[in-house]
Image (cartoon, rainbow, N blue to C red):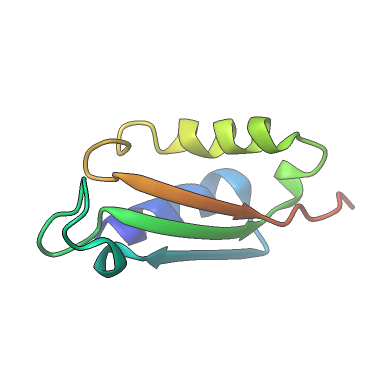
Amino acid sequence: MIRDIIETRLREALAPTSCEVIDESALHAGHAGAKPGGETHFRLKITSSKLAGLSRVAAHQQIYGLLKDLMNNPIHALAIEITPQQKS
């Protein structure tokens, strides 16, 4: 499952205290990029000290970099919500 691949990569690279990957594909049925069976549109909610101090753009770039081979196919859309955890 694509959702599992996303979560595994993020957990390995960013050691988040919270990581939720939500498949929202059903909400986009009939829209561009939607495919039967889903796994095309995701929402990510993540908290990680490795994102602390980064601008929103830099944090998103880091996440997209980890998933670059999945972007556009099979992932059509990825909404990202980041709550940076303070570094200890």
